[in-house]
Image (tube, rainbow, N blue to C red; front, top):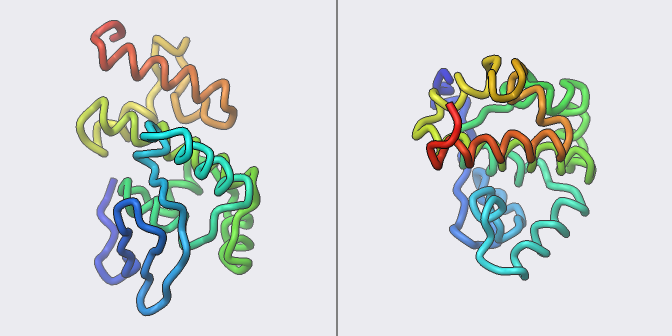
Length: 167
């Protein structure tokens, strides 16, 4: 992934397990669950909090902070068809995503983080997620992320790769 220009990167800081994101001088309430803990939360309470946060809709600030956390750009979400450009624009104006949109974003980020951990870098995970994969019957992993069932198949393959069971 090409690095975003420093001037275009928002001034965002995320407290670890905190409850606020600071964007410039604006403080935005967020869930204490990050994408890392969303992939493997430490407790049932955190999992339930994450589910409730998604169900109520992620705020635009929360999504921006989560994207920054895993080094993914807004453009990636649009290029990978996680969200349509008009949906992104509309949600940006409203300041919040619907529960369904939030779920799609969270699913993508969960798999993205797992791929980056498996392959050790954003560039290697990006290359893998975008290419046809024999273990997925010639499908690109990114093309399977539109459903939870497809995401689970990709996650299972990443686990097998992690354990040296898949090529």
